[in-house]
Image 1 (cartoon, rainbow, N blue to C red):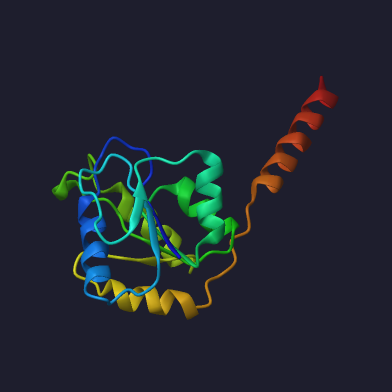
Image 2 (cartoon, helix red, strand yellow):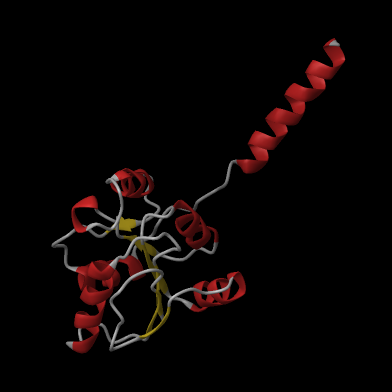
Length: 163
């Protein structure tokens, strides 16, 4: 199952939902699709969706998915990476009123540069990207949270000793 996650922001992302709907209708995507569409106006005809999911439902869908297609939400990208799921990131664009600016392009590029995801850009062949993502060897994401915590604890311990 392909899981599409568009986050909970107040902006629509109709462009991506319609593209996937058309590809599904044309038989170019054969796999089951489920989308969390957020505040989008477009309601898919050829795959299941809900506007919003609970944390438990979201986690379950992500675990069931063979592939994630997501907006450039850092939280969703990190969740997919932590579950070792291939992910295609589609940045929201201001020109389509999907966000206030184009910062999501920079987020997508940063993750793509590290070989953590593929980026879908307007005009790309999404079906080819889906097929490529399923066989591509993405690099493993390793959180540095534990290192940051250890450094902070070390700093605080040294600070305490000097007092």
